[in-house]
Every structure is written in C-alpha cells, then in structure tokens.
Image 1 (tube, rainbow, N blue to C red):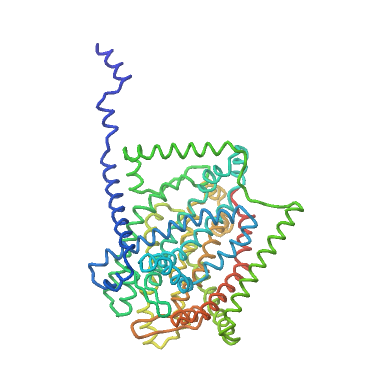
Image 2: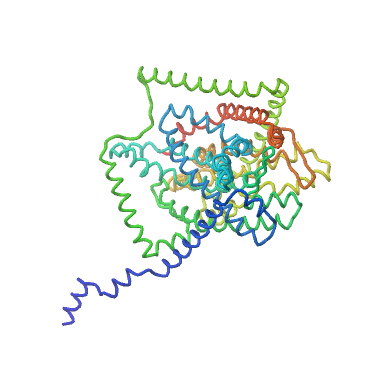
Length: 584
C-alpha cells in the first residue's frame, strides 16, 4: 500500500503543494506594496499637473517644510516622464542614425547642435508654445518644464546608443547573418543587449543631468513671463533668492533621498539584470547585486503574471524571424547609390543654408556687426574654458572610472554617490562662490569657471565606468597572462577597450559644459550678482531681458562653435574607435 501511495504521489503531487505554489509569497506582497506606493505617488502627481494655471497664484511656491515631500514627488514625476521620452527618442533616432548613412548626415550634426543649445534657449521659445497649446491649464507649464528636462537628458543617451550600435563586434554581426535574423530580431536580440551596459549608465547620468538643470526648468523666467512650478527646483530658486541656507540644505537632503530611492528601486536592479549582456567568453568573478532584483526573482505571483507577456513577446519575435531581410547599416557604393548620395547631400546643404539665412535675416533686422563680434568673442572665451575643464576632468576621472568599473562591488557602492554628485545643482554652490569671490576680490572669469564642469564632468566618469564594466574578463585574464606592465596595460589593453565610451562621455561633457555656461557664467546670491565674460552670460542676459534676436544670435554662435569643434575633434575620434577599437 505504501509503495502504491508513493508512486501515486510522484505522479500526482499533493494538492496542498500545488495550492501553495499558486499562492503569493511574502516576496510578492513586498513587491506589490512597493509597486502600489509608486503608482499612488505617480497618480497624485499626474492629478496635480492637470490643475488650472491660476492655481499657481492661489498656492504659490513656499519654503514651508511640509510642502517639500510633495515638491520632491512632483519633480521626480517630471524627470520620469522626461527619461521615458528620452528612451523613446534614443531607440528611434539613434538607431536610424546608426543604420542609415544618409540619416546620419542630418541626425548627428543635429544632435551636436541640440546638446549645445542651453536649456534657457529652449525655454525662450517653448514656454509660449506649450502655454498656447494648453490655454489656462497647468499642463502647458508642466510640458515646458518636462521638455526642458528632456533636452538635458536625451542627447547623451542617443550618443551612447549610437556609439554602441556602430561598434557591435564583427563576429556577432556574422553570427546574426548566418542565422538569418530579421531586422527586428537582430535589434532586440543582438544590438540592444550589446548596448545595454553603456545605455544604462548613461541613463543614470542623464537622470542626474536633469537634476542639474531642474532650477532653470521649474523656475522659468522669460521676459515678462515668470512661472514657478511646485518642485525642488523652484524651492531652491526661492531659497537662493531669500538667502535661506537652511532651506537650501533641506532641498539638497530631499534630493539625496530621492536619488537613493530610485537608485535602489530602479537603477541597481537594472544594472544587476543587464550584467548578463556583457560581451565575454569567460564568466566574471564578481557580479553586481540588487536586493530588489533578488526580490523579484523570488516572487511567485509576479513571475506568473509576467509569463503571458514573455510568451507573447517571444511569439512576436519568432514571427518576425520568418523574413530573410536583415536590418543592417545602409552603405551605398554603386553609381546609382552615389548619385542618390549626392542628391541627398545637396538637399541637406540647401536646408542648412536656408536655416542659416533665416537666422541671419531675423538677427540683422535689429542687430549689427558689433553684436555679432561680441557674440563670437564671448564664444571663443567660453570655448577655452570648456577645453581646459574637459582636459582636467579627463585626467582626474578616467583613472577613477577604470578603477571603479573593474570592481563591481565598488561600483555598487559608488553608484548612488556618483549619481548624487552628478545631480548636485551648481546653484547650491553659488552662495559659496559668490561670497568667496566678492570678499576676496577674485576674478569671476576664472573662479566661476569650475561651476561649468560640476555637472558635466560626470559624463566622463559614468561612461568610463560603463566601458570598464563591459571590458571582457577574458581580455583582462589575457593581459595578466602576458604580464603587461602598468603603462603597457593602460596603453595596450584598457585605454583601447574604454576609448569608444570615453569619446561618448567627453563629447557629451563638452556639449553639456557649453549648456551649463548659461547658469555658471552668471551667479547670484540675494542682491549680489557676478558675471564672467562668455557666451553663456551673453545668452542669460538676453533671456532675462526678453531680447529674442540676441538669444537667437547667441544660440546660433554657440551651435556653430560646437559643430565645428565636434567635426574637427570628436567625429574623427568616433571613426577611429569604430574602425580600429571594436571588440572582435
């Protein structure tokens, strides 16, 4: 009898065990509680965004400490929406640029220009547009703020993804062609996983970069239009205006708590999950860990709820695999293709000349050659600052980033600290710099310069960490086996391995420094105001005065400087990285 029951139990598992596996466990409850709390915060913030615009007059921004949690939630919601829009932009525009040489001719220079346009340069023209799009509603001002935050996030992510798609190892390319993967399957099964480590670190950097410009995004002043949306940025702007050190400290504390929360709940689980996409032939000795990622893996109900989604995604992927078309970069070498390339180049040049003439005609109506000369000279001064600061930041953060990236355990500890430092608004340090410069009679042209690189130097650090983290373990073991000396190891192994990532970081840091000049070359603390000569202060003065022709002139000159500099330096380095330093 016992033997029969044992066999029956093997064939038909006990009913209680089946019921127990179907019920949610403690990990499901914890995860659902976290998810529910997040959805409640998002729903409340979304409801407040749809209030009438007059609500800002009824309940203006105040430094009441009880309002700070709500302000932090509102700012976080704007940044989440902006980062989602940035991801959508990255997966479409950056992919198009990487796949099509003709699209690349337009998209890459456009990204060069857009990343150099200051946030205030966008706000000058977008505030009126969005307020007209949602008349009488707070949604117009919210959309303007979200768009401004988007402009501080999207370009860095797009450049990172573009660089990764252009440097996919050739052997993986050949494998995808051998298995006749469709363009859709190739993109999601090969290219996106390969680009994932760099994209994740740059997404974290972009999230932090949004914090750097949050004051300009939420406390909007364009001519006679002044809007202060409830948020940490507006709180900081009001605290700086009133010289309230305690309020500034509370805002920094709230910002640090928010960064720690989304690092633990969002980014660290994604980093742990994406570690499986590293390109290597041997297993890494250390892997990043996340308690949230482990929590999700131990759930029952959540994993079962996600099973139909995974099944549907797999079916869709397999359905697209039936086509033999592969989505690779479009290269044209035939005579007809050369003719099409020439025609496309003529169209691009014609559009560029038309845009340049439109800007020239608009500016010429009110400004003269002396104004143009002033903008060009100021642009040269700002360019010198950018070059010096990027060089110093590279010498400091490349070794640090390599050391951190090669040690996953340390990367986990440094990750939230680096995000906080990258997110730290330069405006918070304005009081220290302004008081120090004013009391010591220092030259603002020199001592305001470090404010430009405070938020942008982290692009270099984050990209170098991403490159070092993605450096294959087998290459590290080979370097150890060949007993490469310290300088040989840097020159022959790690520097070539991280070089594509460094170029992306330095390129975006350069563009971000130009962007940051608009808040760094003009510093104020109460009634004390300091200005450094440069294109950033030129645009800031014009924006505050509502002088649109000067704003257009300043943005156009800045864009011209950035495009020329990128074409002479960063683009050749991109090509070199793509042709000579791919992992093969």
